[in-house]
Amino acid sequence: MKRVISVVGARPNFMKVAPIDRAFKKYSDTVEHLIIHTGQHYGAKMSDAFFQELEMPKPAVFLGISSGSHAEQTARIMVEFEKALLEVKPDLVIVVGDVNSTIACALTAVKLHIPVAHVEAGLRSNDRSMPEEINRLATDAICDFCFVTEESGMKFLKTQGFPEDKTYFVGNTMIDSQHFALQKADRSNILQETEIEKGKYVLVTLHRPSNVDEPEQLKSILKVVGELSEKRDVIFPIHPRTRKNIDSFGLNELLKNVKFIEPQGYLDFLALMKNADFVLTDSGGIQEETTALQIPCITVRKTTERPVTVEVGTNILIEPTPEAMKTAIDDMLTKPRKQGQTPPLWDGRAAERITEIIVTQILHY
Image (tube, rainbow, N blue to C red; front, side, top):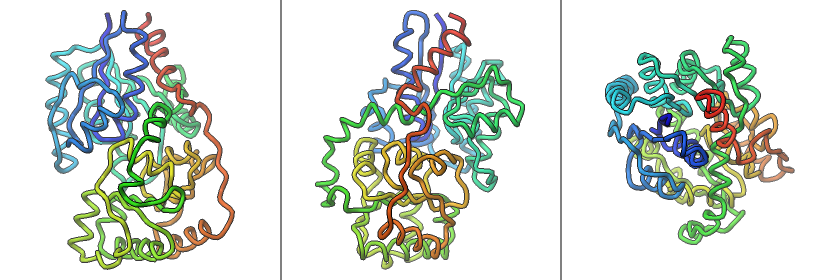
């Protein structure tokens, strides 16, 4: 019996690992799959709910790391994850995405000579001011196997000299979770609870430090959002970081017509995305999810690490300036919408491909 650990830390990780856990059940006679939760994001609404809604088993180990600076958080994860590895003794560690838990656990495992597979490898924004970009670069530089969601990742890994026989184009496990959860999301009452009507509201999310930590930048973005709320209902599940900065910078008056709600669990947020007229965001994963749902998306960032969502999907990437935002929103409200397509292999079966490769080619069963 081989033992495989998948690491989750931040909320997007849960959506990426849940399908992998389900797919490993096919191989339960030869592979024991365990989940370790670092605790990087933790709370009943934002962590426990995701486990329940995605039907994930309780983590075999919970490290309880919580918040801190990038250095503090990464260091604490490494210390506690090393203890877990020495106890569990896995044959393979799977890390997903680009959060601090990703690089911390990859680095710890590699130094203990435990093979590491990176799911969602090869994505690049080419913006090193983003901590996620550093995590991507570092993780891909040290991992043993790369599982890739889109062609841009394959091309980058090839240019970087990553072994082609250890690089696998498999699709997107986040979209696997979306396929799994859509019927459940259709039973959500979030639209009724927030008193919004299907197809007649705009969903807004903002949390990037570059957009929300500097007072003038945040003010300029929120002013445009406030103007949008005079034309359409705007629903804004607000990230704690963004909420704190809006309050401390005294910007609430700009958003008097906006419907603020607390951060949502996976199913309710999926329902909000699926039924929106369009989405305005600076998120990474939401670019992918809206493309898979065929919902128009405006991404307020200078770069994206998910170019397939722009090249093939429904995503429009714009500079984070008031002028660019106003133009994009006006186009969205008055002109024909961009027609997107589903990217290759975003078919809900990425986790099946990943686990088959792991079992047959990496663990050699």
